[in-house]
Image 1 (cartoon, one colour):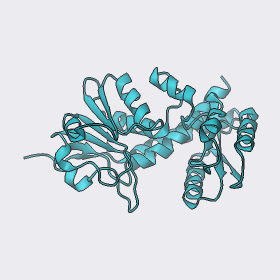
Image 2 (image 1 turned 120 degrees about the horizontal axis):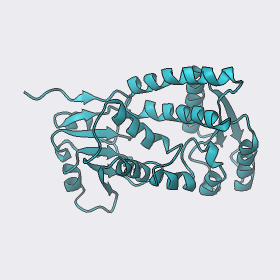
Image 3 (image 1 turned 135 degrees about the horizontal axis):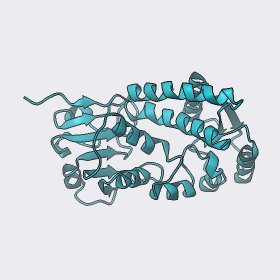
Amino acid sequence: MKSSPLLLDGNRVAIDIKNQLVGRVSKLKERDIVPCLATILVGEDPASATYVRMKGNACSRVGIRSIRIELPEETTTEELIRAIKQLNDDQSVHGILLQHPVPSHIDERAAFEAISIDKDVDGVTMQGFAQNAFGIAAFPSCTPAAIMEILKYYELPIAGKHAVVIGRSPILGKPVSAMLLNKDATVTTCHSRTSNLEQHVRSADIVVAAVGKPKFVQGDWIKPGAVVLDAGYNPGNVGDVDFEACIPHVSAITPVPAGVGPVTITMLLKHTVEAAERSKR
């Protein structure tokens, strides 16, 4: 009789990390260092405002100070970069997060590149991406870091496994492919131009779904006993994986919600604390 699959509970992972962070923050405060995350919100997108508020609340729960910089919709690229550079120069700020997306008239890449590598706790700069590829990034992109943290927490083997990543975005698909490769997985990165996608997925021991399409990954694509990590979040609390259809095939799977998402936010907190620790070495 087939055993029930392991549900990879992101809330459980996140709570464990946060409990550790509380102690690390306390030690920093004994040295008069208060970890600080500055979040920049340009415009009045309701979803972005909600995300910023959630991140601020998460900071307060572990003792991290959060600063919210709100800029009007008509802010120019030059004005945004100026605000970022002021935060770079502020020694009391340890991490900088530019909430995505910014208004279309802003050169988002130029704004990301203005963030100091020492404060790039969200892993959005090209330098951070390159460091991640070499396996030396202090602060890799938070969702890929969350995926790796879940695999580590549940002691799921990576070395020698075939991992298939569906998606190639510069802050998710590409960096998680590099991180899995650096842990000795054999990695196939699939995307919108991939031929015979289902066949690639059927050969995978580890599947990472990061495609941005609800219930895209079907149950009959999954190799028996595969581990599935769903990094998608779509309207209606639906991931990129057809969860119910995949359950009979997997050995372990993340739910949506309460899978990768909670750990992603926690990795942002962890990176901010680590940036504070590094700042005074």
